[in-house]
Each structure stands twice: as structure tokens, then as C-alpha cells.
Amino acid sequence: MGATKTDHFTGKQNAIATLAKALGHPARVAILEYLLKVDTCICGDIVNELPLAQPTVSQHLKELKNAGLIKGEIEGNSVCYCIDEKAIQKLKAYFGAISTKLENRKTDCC
Amino acid sequence: MGATKTDHFTGKQNAIATLAKALGHPARVAILEYLLKVDTCICGDIVNELPLAQPTVSQHLKELKNAGLIKGEIEGNSVCYCIDEKAIQKLKAYFGAISTKLENRKTDCC
DNA sequence: TAGATCCATCGTAATATTGCAATATTAAAT
DNA sequence: ATTTAATATTGCAATATTACGATGGATCTA
Image (cartoon, rainbow over all chains, first blue to last red; front, top):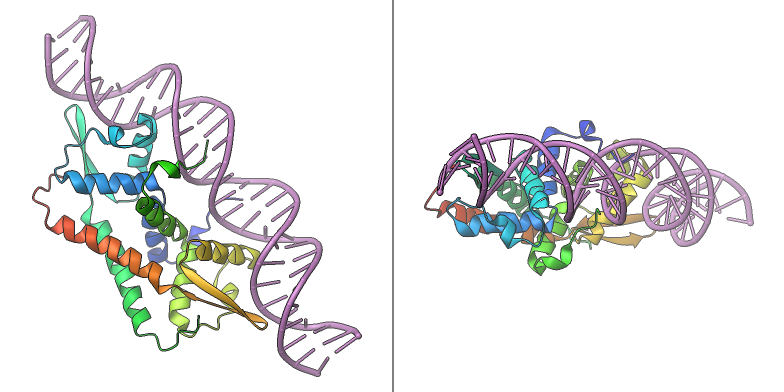
């Protein structure tokens, strides 16, 4: 096997899993943080920031894009990538809600 | 290859990636939500809640535990698993901080 | 003590991910 | 039109993940 049984879970569960999976690699976390740092999105030098070869970085960017975490527009010779705020909002809201529920938890057995 | 180059990234980046990776599978998201729902932590019937065989669920639980997202104690015949609030706090704080920075962003090119 | 129940582990097969070299593509610059 | 620069794609090897059947150990119940 090795194939995830996505069809047995709810759409929301799959959505969160997709976002989380995209950030389940330190290189992609680093890319996100770099995009956050540069603020302006003219960023063709992500490769220089990472200890990875250009094709590898390109692949990670693709996965972040597929997951909806970043948006990218072709801008002449280079490419403009930036964080998609909606995805971050989803994650923030999700963990915020869980946290709230945990605080209201009556029992804390472990 | 296939092995992640964790040693080239910061500890914090790896920590977030580890947590995110653990939630990068809908079954594990579902487990988290179930643990949240039952509130009390005597929860030996996660298997019945999921469309997966018992060994598979056990494996997912192990990964959640390794990542620090859940805690578990053997309690007689069944096992008591519950969410580790600290991990959720980390995720909440992380995405909250990113969100704040995004809101203060001057440029929004994409 | 003898089942019954619950959970973890082992072994294994199928598939996915990670990483890079080589190559292709694209658009600006000369 | 050619070169140059930046990013994408392809192909491949190494490794990781996902899933489950079979098995085993621990504990509860009768």
C-alpha cells in the first residue's frame, strides 16, 4: 500500500491534512518564513537561502502552491511567490478552535 | 534519496515541520478531533471511529505520540490517550504570529 | 485457570516523498 | 538572432509512508 485513504474522511479533515502535510517538511517551513521575511514578493533567490539544489526547491515550491499555501505569478524573468493569507487563516482558526476547546476541557487525565 | 535534510534547518523549523507532518494525514486529523470530542480520555475505541484496521490506527497513534501531539498512558485493559495541549499551543502561536505579520504587510503583490 | 479483549509489534507489499543531475522552457538583454 | 539568466520538468535512486494480516503480550471476566 502507501496510498492514503482520503475518501473516507471529511472534506475539512482532508483540507487540514493537505495544508499540514505541505508544512511537514523543514524546507517548506523555511520557504514560508523566508517569504514572510522579505515582505515584498520579488523573490528569485530562495534557492540561495536553502541548502538544497534548485530543482529541489522548485519542487517544494510546487507543493506549497498545490496545497494553496502560496500564490505565484510569473513576472518577466523571475517569479513572484507570496503567502496565501487564506491558508494561514485556516490553520490559525483551526488550532485556535482546538486550543479553546482544550481550555474548556473538564477532565485532564494524562 | 528520500531522506530529509533536517540538520540544515533550524530547530524551530524542524519542530514545526514535525508537528505539521504528524497532522499531514487525514486519519491523524480525525484521531485528534475524536480525542477532542470525547473530552474524557478513556478512549479505546478509536478504531471503530476510523475506516482503518487496528494495526494501522495503532501506528498512527504512535506517530502522533512521537511528534508530541498526544500523550498516552496504559490504564488496565485499555489505553488512555489525550491531546498534549503544549503542541497545540505551539501551532496556534506559530500560525497566529504569521497571520499578524501578514496583516502588517505593506505590499500585497499577488 | 481459561477464554476474551485490547493494544502493540513484526513482516511485507504498494505507493509516496525527497533530492539531484541533466535538460527544457521562458523571457529579458545584448 | 544569440546569449544569458531564472525557473520548470524529467528521470532516476534512495528512503519513507501507508496499510493490513498474523502474532504476541497484558489484563479483565467468568
